Image (cartoon, rainbow, N blue to C red; front, side, top):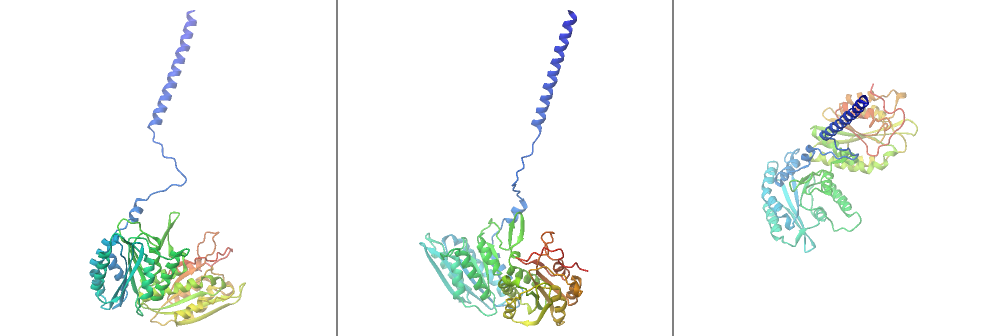
Length: 477
């Protein structure tokens, strides 16, 4: 009996110990779980904020510094230039402080101008809305900056509680239509507004339509738009496409620059999406290298696929020459055109040496032939025929929407074409084609290499033909 009781006690004791051990294990697990910091659940669409990027996007406004920068950029490349400046100002009540700053800092702007030239003129266009009615006032050219100061003060003092921001796009059109522009002078428009740019036009897509007219008139009259204004895409776009610059009117605004866009976390140059923008970027790069006398020769793809791109190419030439003119560059134009029969026929290479008038070059841009293209033939056969004078620099600009085809039957290789360019002491810029998107080869081997090895620049033509064959450009050899 005693033995049976002992067995029972032992079993109960064992159960108690097991229960205690289980309780201890559960307690330890709970303590560990509570002490552990679990990471937040990851979501598929995360937004990562880069503090340094935020700082870059914050802009500081200084109207005086902006005015000085406008005239410094306008005079940096030219000795004894002529300068014409048109102020286009928002005369609303809310602009009172900005107009005071403009009045005070005009003298600082004038000091920068007079270090370079005594040949300058000013004009003024004001715009506002009074009791809901648009009002624009044009002050014709004057050599008296005091008169401009007085006009600005009158605009400011006349503004009251019923004077609001007017139609800035219409004011630009009026200035471009009513003012006379001097031959050989790059006119600087300076727009000052703390509101969005508007128009009275009522057509569909009116803002884009009037903006295109403004850009067209600016290019025709050699006008650059500089805008001290708001973070609005149309303001940045107008400045960018007329070779001007956008400045903030208030500190703390979001940085706005038509030249740069962001997509999927990647920031790219917006000019790379437009043919005319590429021409401008090439011109700016060339001017920055400070050449002396330059022969600019286009190696132009004359095949039919280029036909839809010719008008944009002509606009690009206008932008390029505007940059050259503003920089005082001594340049001459020439062109090498190339095409071939469909299916690998014999190449035709036509060399037209400098100097050519811009309109002659445009005419040649606009006459593409039906057929194929052989870029290596154009380089190897055409460049030696230019015979550039020793006192002039040779700049070649290849313009094609296709990849470089193989020419092994003639012994033409990418390496030989590059040697021809280097032997001619040419700097080569390329707006070119794409070999194969399937293999991840973005661009063309020869076209990339010839730009790199001659210290030029390489871009892919917007809307380039994607060649999906197994060959592509010859490797340099």
